[in-house]
Length: 166
Ligand code: ZN
Image 1 (tube, rainbow, N blue to C red):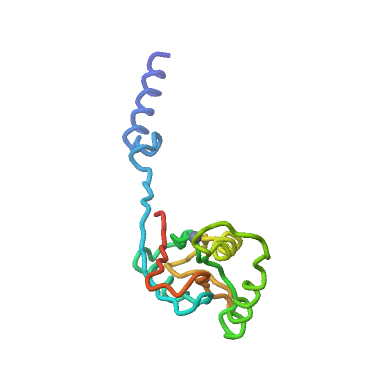
Image 2: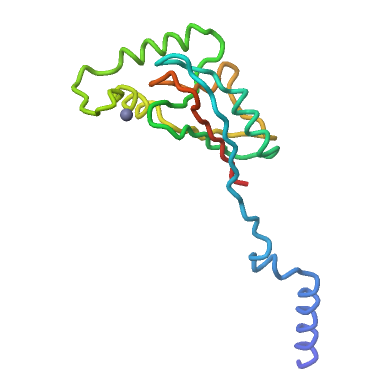
């Protein structure tokens, strides 16, 4: 009985030496993801304007990663927006710009800057995107492009920031 218990203990020890116990505990092998950012600027030339910025976003992403994950793309402003839509026919951004303008309700805006229409549309469209990438490349549909939507231009230095967490 004692002999058997001894063998059993020995077996456990062998297992212990074969294992890196940190694998079981976990702490030493956790990959700590780090938030990484790349920001670029762009200039707009009209009050309302849609710029397709897919290649700029892709370039920024490429400086951050060649891996797989989900990127967050933000515009740190309150009178522009970011979205995804057709990247082929230039009539589409022009049509959408007209449609956005028509969407502004005829209500009294109190905000002294006189640009509450832009704040309103920015609120509707949104100021961030969450988008998947593989091997550092955005996974977009054939007809999809990333839209920067200017709503209170022209502006000389709008910013777009791309974040990855890996
Ligand atoms: Zn304002």
